[in-house]
Image (cartoon, rainbow, N blue to C red):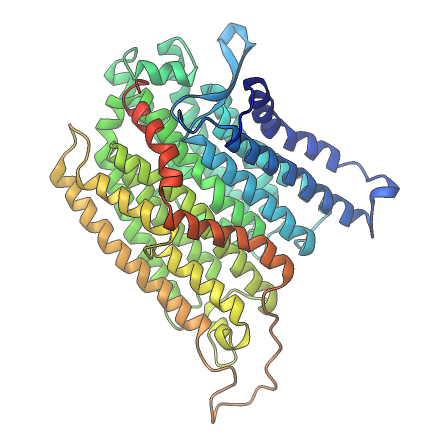
Length: 532
């Protein structure tokens, strides 16, 4: 780690949040003639890579300058008055909970910009695409960096419009319907969440998230806490998404362009679960304790439902879309995150935070891979990919097949890879929940979640078998359909975009203490009401 002065750390965090907006503004005008390269489209795509690359470098420097001996302390803080009449402040800061998500967002956005430079999505002007991508990055980064409830809401909402247009303008079939479903679900949930945030702020006399967490609900009556948790929780549950508020997700993922799916799964879903940890758990603990068993019940239903939906899509003749299948898998994986949060224990919450990061890495990689398959075949239909002249990736594109198998076994929670630790710790937390919660109920939830891990392994292994294995030529006696088309293996730009995700999946799986060492002290302090 390196020694960086507090003022430089402040600047770095402010730069990380604001720079994407400046980059979006400068992406819209035409590039000067001398910077156009082979054309204006290439220039603006290169601009996106440059801006997101600079933000990633700043995030890495911020992580290196972070005091890892005190991860529970808010660092790189900025706190200035913005709307004095409402006591709304521009309050920024990071601790061991938000720092990993900040770096993950910067990394995934850079990899998406890099991938798009070589493989631009089909659609309107790349200028608008890059601008929307940067606005989306700014809103996501701000969500993880702000420490004021109203600023959190603004950042939370800021990502909706760019994601809507990314789906509606650059998406595939049924993109308009999927985009509308996405925006309506999330906006309706956010309206309810805003009421809950206002209820907390007005009753407590402050919107400052650090002060509210330190009070640990002492300034709020139980009825206010219960009402606030219900309202805020609905908004966060839609974005997570929690069953049964998940139905917008499969449609959005199926229609979205590849980079839209990567960012939607990799970082946007984390905004909901981060809100549960940062706001609901420390600010309204009594209200959370009331709803924790219901949250856990919905979580395990989501785990089983997501897995059964994936099994139905994976079976032969179902006509399942591979992007849709991975979207349903996210419902199951986020169920483990919610189960860990519902346990209200340090072990469970640490597991939830670890699973958040692991899911971002692994599912981001899966959507990149499925996007590459769709580019090569023109479809993500599983029956087409697994047909007699289908993928057979091990024989026709061994590197692509190997990466898909790697991502699948990481997603099913193979020990030694990142997907294992988060789900295991979440179940450990539910096995022995916080005082005041029914242990028999949570033991039941844990048993159901364990069964869900078996279903997860089943559908992912079926996908690997159907897509990666098989003959590279039609079987003897089968109807000849002409020569097999050539299938390109992993290209250089794809390798550059995917290698960091593979490496981090392995590192997080082999050395989980790297991440848990950051989150655990911060979680302990958060659950103790701001006391280390």
